[in-house]
Image (spheres, each protein chain N blue to C red):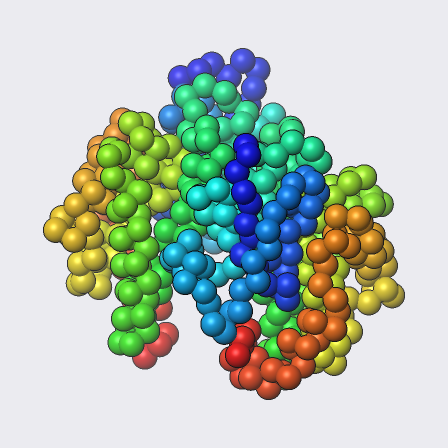
Length: 222
Length: 226
């Protein structure tokens, strides 16, 4: 890990937040040393509220006393501040594609998770359309970033654990090896990558949390 | 790059305007291709297969979609007027407020116009809070970007024109000079900036979109194009 050189990097996070995971993965790839502060989201710290008064959310990255919020914005900040181990494509068009997919890739997934019947069908159509296009982005590549994990891999990385959990809870398989061979392979390669492998909480713990959230939402509806 | 620039857009859309103003700020030549959103062209669907939305910037053969992505692309590819600052923290700050505008302010503003009763009251309260926060960001400057237009100004363009028109159509007066003097002053500066003047739609064009569709938009809580 790169020694901080008098620079202080602190990450305020929450163990199950996919937005926080993005930042952790980026910090790992960039080999940036940082201090991690776990927040109790039901009792947010005064520091968190001071650093992110607008949204009051995690993740927040504090660098030499200055706070940056919003995970994708933090990723770009990390890329621009630490020059080595680049995660962004160099080409402006590739950057634009990555930035587009970073937000669009997840469209419909949450809706698919928390709805039923016709609403779910519509969400699923949207999700499948997106995944078909994402699949194309992986042609000839191991990762969205090429040979190495990049900004887009990090941004959509939560799919690698989130989708299997959604599939388990809803009992509906979306990403199968037959339908999405490249995406399927990407999920495995990403999860097993040295920068990701030991960063995630136990699968069972994550699964349990998502199930609790899902049950609470479903109960409210019925 | 000697490649042609085409912008698929729609004058009534603030998203389309964002892309246009960025091109104008850089002084680059482009062809504006008007899209009829009730009858989308094959080209649009080909270049923006997921969202099928405008704006789409076609640089040579490559399509770039999503207004902020387009603006950042334009800033990176073309020299001239800088849209984002150079400093990484200032860039993060600009992107943060751009996102605040798109994720919070615009949906709140929209819903405050197209709901009623208690729901509307709640959205109005949210709008007031957001506008106050945003106005605070101006800190006495001419633009959010300082002396010249930057990313935040471009992303906030709705507040310089579209919100005012929508308010008028539905009978609200949230963004007024008494309550938000600095924000209204900013709106004036924005509308009068040279690059903006060249591509800002006429007020009547926007009224002409909203007024006849008022009831249908109210029912759907979303734009109706036909």
